Length: 423
Image 1 (tube, helix red, strand yellow):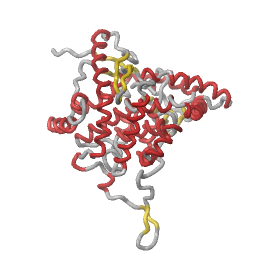
Image 2 (cartoon, one colour):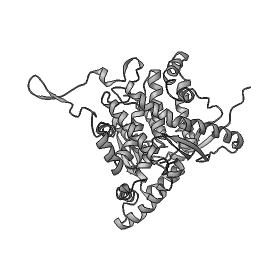
Image 3 (tube, helix red, strand yellow):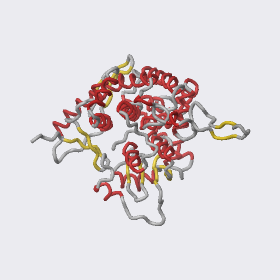
Image 4 (cartoon, helix red, strand yellow):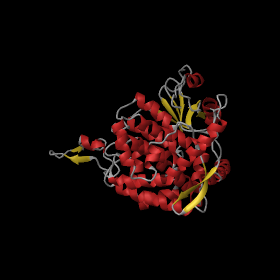
């Protein structure tokens, strides 16, 4: 569930390790290595399907991890994309950034300032905060165990017998369930996480009743991030899947749509009978297939954004504070690698407070939003700040000064960057 990631994906360093001469026996199209249980695999897979980019799905078996992923990437993690020229790219955000430069149409990146920042914020919130309901609903409910264990066993160890797969999967299940306290998912927070998720489902239902995607008639990067997290954990798993399909069927339909199973979440049949009595495909007007005009953010999206800022904003700000201290005290020119976590800190969700690990990767993802904001002209920055000031910590998150806690990725590992002195 946790993964890390390089702004310069195809740097000389990475290419030297990951690119090789093509042989006639290997694929000449993109290969996406991952699994149905992985939300970040689902994020990339839905993007590839939407863009109609040919790719070969590759199951991340135990053998694939041991003989390909770990040697090429440096540790066991998915998704991994292998390009036709044998460049190996890890992390969903990096993969989509790489592909978007080469396959820009139709774009998933709005061009107006507020929509641009909101799309990036939704990706941040989806990738980094949606782990709370996703991990809770998968690993806290025994109703999921038969399905999840069989899925893990079948995907990772396809050649093993059903009995052996079950035994191995039980060990995997215990390992992941044991990780929940690092995320602050305990009996103290179960109820609050569930209430938050149910409210999110209700808010998303209202939104998708009016709009096919978050920002209008075409999906943005945030749709793929949220859709991936929801499909892999909260739609397919039995317990949360039943909840979504019964409480929020429109959200379930949107999740299927984002994974490429439906063309339109709230309009299943895109055909009509013409004047001559023949069935023809209905073509939506161009304005209904684009982002909303005039940099509009739908009112129905505001409660969703408010919840994310309220719950995740303090977590980000606390992580920034501790990461800044860590980098100042520990990072040197010869020692830049960051730990996976920075220790525990209290966080609050609803009426519950619990200890939760702080992850430097959260800051790496947050940087994308801040860097995007800082790249805007001053008038556009003012427009964005005017919009986000309605949310708790809105301006602090979008216009944050992260210069003292910059995080980079080198060969798929997080590195802390010392602040450069001004001469």
